[in-house]
Length: 66
Image 1 (cartoon, rainbow, N blue to C red):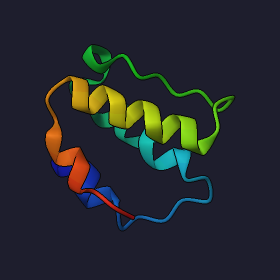
Image 2: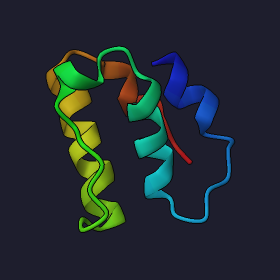
Image 3: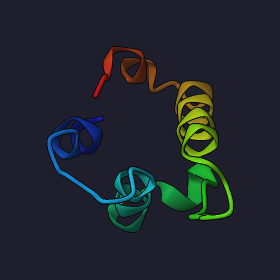
Image 4: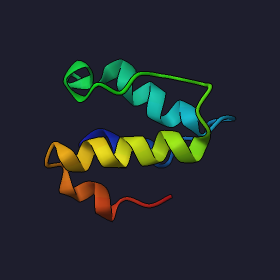
């Protein structure tokens, strides 16, 4: 959960890019199974990420905020 905390401060014109950027550098991205999809709304992308992180035991995702 180090990466999400670091990237919280980064600005992006499309907030989904924050998630998709993490997927590009995360060593466990394939295991998590989340793929960039700009057809999904921002809410859908962040909800899917939270669901996947929690299901893989990353409970500190609950402490992240914008």
